[in-house]
Length: 288
Image (cartoon, rainbow, N blue to C red; front, side, top):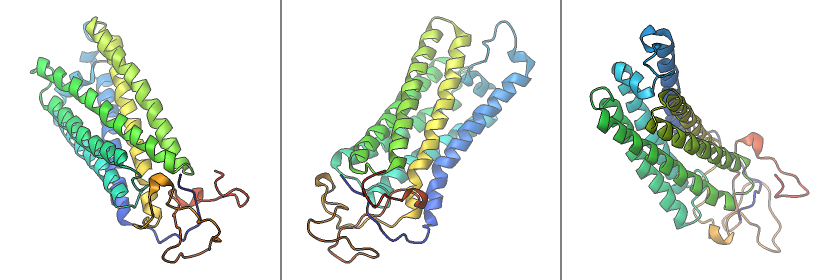
């Protein structure tokens, strides 16, 4: 396990703000898009008839507002891929929770791959709307939902593995548990959405679809939190030892810990949270 030890912070890494914007743009585009679609539904009388579900499906709104829905899905999909790619590269380049084993590397790149498939399906279902291409539209929708869950699960398990080695990080722990709660809730709602749609209970099915859409927004927002530590802290040294064996950031037995800048050969681990969270109890260095 990597322990938290004092380190000297560098000046703010401004280029990391650009990477922070990737999930932020994705979150804002998808969330604002859903709110706009709900607003259009609530203000147009044609949707409030006995033959229409209450509310209508997102796909129905998208089919009649393709000029807005297609760009919304394209922007969301592209920035969704870039967000996962940024997280993977930041970990690989040691600016963010350095990868501790090959299992995490596999999960990270698998999340990038499945997020690309998820984005492709999202863009495809927006173009092939359910009014003109009903059958293929719902096939793309099913693939989008499955791939979104797989990408999220890969990211969650990667963060679980990382948390084993960076137990001092409250930010990492919060991200993992929040994502886990969201994904479990979303799976339950997605199953309810599919089941109710199969049994032609369209209104209740549509409500669960909107819930799943907003839960995905919350998940994307947590990707912003994942990138946040890369803005403030020094790059992890490349000669940090074998993380799986606890060689990174631990003090050698019998050697007093030095304050300030470290010299070659000394153990060193910058904190992996914003400065406000990088405090420690002098009596217990590992106490959160």
